[in-house]
Length: 427
Image 1 (spheres, rainbow, N blue to C red):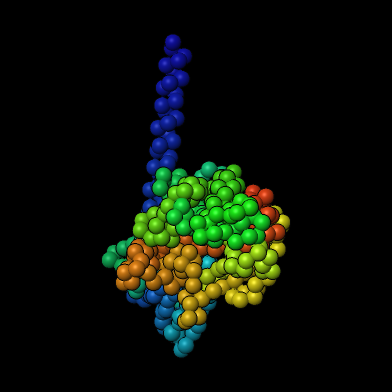
Image 2: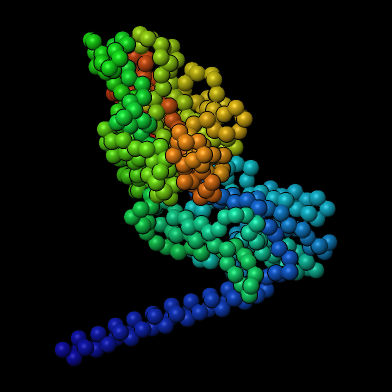
């Protein structure tokens, strides 16, 4: 009994020591942070004129002016102890500088690579043979962003990107802690195109033309919406096996889903703070007889995008789906990759790309057109990265058969493409 009491007492002492040590470390970092913040030159500052989170990247645009004795400006994330250089494209016109962190909407600061701690986005310059830090202040209409990293080995980080105050001065802070995803936050959203009220294209297995009721006389009728859902469920299974938390915009073949509103096909990704939205469709040419010569995969992407993930999607879907790139030439950017724009040549045509991306993709459905509900995220700077995939032409009899026989192959190709992309960007 005495030994047990001594053991309990010893454990209490160890526990208290751990608490004291952790408290001392916290106080040390708080003091160091305040010392670092006090050394920033608040008499000069840069401006953030644009910023957004698109997928896993955070992108900034801004400007600043330097005195003649200031040189070699660098954009950094720093806390006075740890420091990371942020790549930027910078232009100088007589000491008036303009910058952007990437020319691509899916470029900039990779939020997945940030480590735990508190950092500040600052301009680092040389002045009289010493280092000086300048703050960046918010000249946009946007405020804070909360980002949850993709699930990795069952763990996540929460990144609060906030416009902080120090002694009445503004600066941009990154506060990064270990956490787990809240119940209503997801990694990836999948939209199985169309729904129980909108079948999309209806085709007959033998290539004949269905009647006005969507029935086939001598073969089985297939709805595009059902095929989309089958692949979506297979993709959800593949991604969940990889450890991701996945949300479908509809949970059954018969379920219906609005376009906008809080949890629509075009809004679920942003409501759930997903990092990627994958819209699955199947194409058609409406040529009767099932002998359409057009066939193959088309991956649609937003303008000003890097094609790293798109190229991997094309490669892996073709491999595991046992298919080929599309023979369609209209809107083609490179093999298997397509960009379709509205008349202005900038705004994406498909709402599942345009409206998902908010300001990064020129979303505009604000409710002024009474034929559509408003997209609550049309003016958002905190959005998912969207891809729309036309997986094949179901009015091509040969391709329809392949799609029906191998939905898991298409799903595996998409999942492995995303996995490979994330591995590459984490290097």
